[in-house]
Image 1 (cartoon, helix red, strand yellow):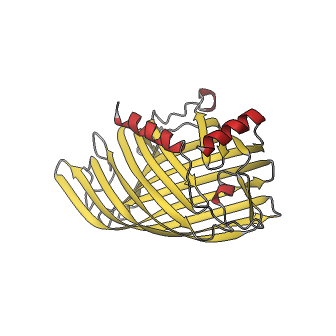
Image 2: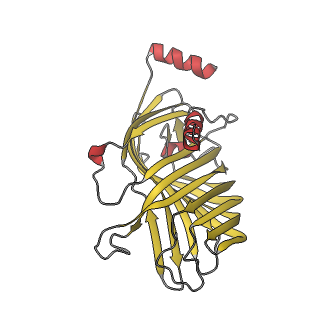
Image 3: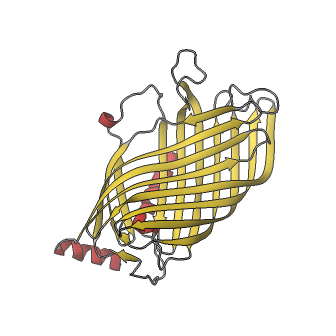
Length: 336
């Protein structure tokens, strides 16, 4: 069994384990819960992991992006258990000349009442440079089938105002935020990863002060984070949620090339952005959700390198009471 298969099985198992917490007091005048109902969803999503390189001394920017698929899927949430299944069907993914990206993107976002847990496992082979025509004389995309990205990490956040603020209302929509509220978020994160290629990861960069011959870089980061989240509710049913967390990670990075390896230590500012908007009611809901994790890799002063990982999703949700037989089965499973 290869490592990608092992990580896939691990994330599937983790996705089938509910996030359990000590019972939390909630203010029902701010949000309602639907733990006794099944929250079913039909959705479209697109995941991505890209590499962004900037050379401030020359103004050159290398924006590596993957050619990922738009996925269509179904899912359901019951109490603290969520399972989603999606597939990138060919009829909604025409070829646009961006090359082939072989990837396994494992993102798990667990939204409890008192805390959030985010887990990442990224395996990407083959990227292209954006915009179209950059680095090419024929106007096509500059393709890097040899470029490989790997990233593993996770974060934890405690939700201070969990009595009145619900992330689950905005993301899972098995709750309904009916009044505006915000909260302070405090936690921590860790990331490890690498980018490698058969030739230079940084083509087109000048030779002064940068590493044009780097064909592999590795990084390890760990640090605390703090943030804030707020949901604006309009006429009880429409909502806009924004959340931004900043982390001060201590980082160790290595840049490897034909001339040797350079190691660096230091603090890096990372960020986690979440944006949600939509409509919510007792029986149905609609939402657009966006999450983006930015990990800055420590490098020399005139070279900026970062990895961006995210997910854009559109959901339509219906809540319903399970039938007598299904309810007995659910009660039996969750009682155990």
